[in-house]
Length: 319
Image (cartoon, rainbow, N blue to C red; front, side, top):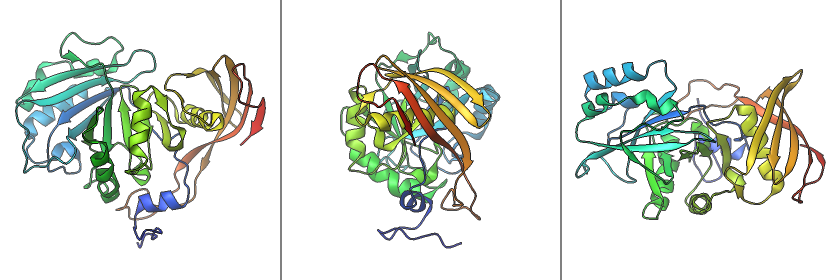
């Protein structure tokens, strides 16, 4: 199948999504627990079948987390490769993504088998474990997983390079979902996803996040929330029209209705009711290597009504 050509000459799922304005809000995958393991590659697909990882150890690690809500990822420093092995111990992170009780623990290791000595399912739970070193800053993961989707590498690596060398801790990572929205970035432990980033938009996005603010333009959602809740929050952030704090919009209620989902959100002393419906999007390839296109599910916001107390939003609006 011949994929569409973007105005800049690129072909692929990311170019198609970017230039057909496919909705990115409400597309963050759901996961409360994350296991990040440093490995310079080469990365294959599936990621943990990559050369240099002991197959027997990987199998035992998989057994430890099977059936749990722990998402395993490989990570490496921006620009690192198999020809530049890391010096000293490697790093692993256990992360609990949450709105109310997020935490990160760093575990240094020389041999992958050392990770078998810890409880990896601890990442599911709000109480941080006693092992590992506490991390009190955000980790930024940029997907550059070429073997999963070439677009992720083509668009992700320049973004990772643009973010490298700053004060924020940035890693390249394997597949995070939403290949057609590359370049994708995940901020942990907050669980916030951004998409369609480029070397120009990524640095201010991360700089704002380091100040506790979310720029709404590239916001996909949070892995802690349902797709409908992600879309509702993204729509409210867009309506506010200025950077709003990471946790300044609260989800107070979510209920199914005959035509979709109604959410009650709080912001700046005001309450907002957001109506969301689930629809099929237009047919498109979801990855660069897909054999045939599919129709992705979208969570479309139909109406926002509210009683703002902080000012700045009308009382009712249809989307």
